[in-house]
Length: 336
Image (cartoon, rainbow, N blue to C red; front, side, top):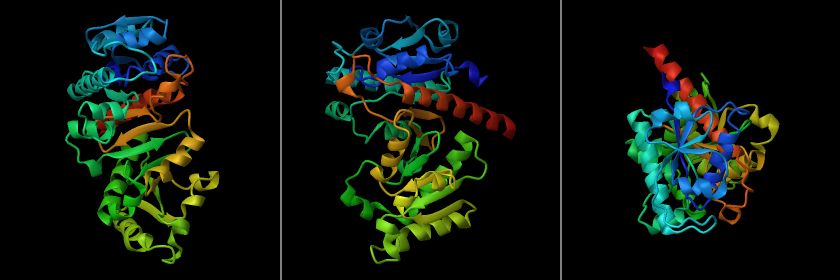
């Protein structure tokens, strides 16, 4: 049964808050009905910031017998000297090693879903990491093209998808295309069904310009790019609407009219999500053959090791990964 396999949770940078929020998530496992998971990374990173029970395991199958009484850890001990709040390249190597191991466990079926802790991209780049982020790294490992791996940020009342992600704002207009928007829309609709159980997803699209361009007076991206993409999605049977002025898309009445909103650029999507669901936002990658989630925040080095990290987003990421993998397993069983 898929439910007998644990989730694989990579710790992220050992000097960040990843180890602390993973430990706190384990401590809250009963209150939040979390599925069994195994932490992957340097066990010393958890021991530096938490005094609770930790057990080193050698195989994910041991999680089932350990999880009720202690946090199981598959230890990757190559982080050098770990000092919370002080990242270095050794810690980045450890984070990458842990991510590789976690991906491998899910790929081989030893774990049923992947949850990734926050990493320092600057330190990863210093050791030769060439991907924009963990999302693109995981997609490549599963042979998925970048445009088909969709980064969705999800909270209890809002799901957003940035059509372009980590690029300069000045480059966004040149990167938007009908093909890109259609690809993101398809992947979003499919992901909402597979991961959230929404049979007929409703997609809303934000305009690029103020007031959605005011019929071309403030720009033609809505007319020339976004609207034609929406028409193509509708022709495929996807419930797609817009483009709408972004400043009126996120109040409660508007949020009730769609299941996800696709935005043209990073901050257009993430500002409302983090404003409404800062402590419970989850990054879930759509378009993959596996379930992958992560908390929607960074390493928070300034508070690492101070017992100040709020674990809500990690708890939500673990819960969402478990729920999504259960839905996928049920859908797979039904299709046989």
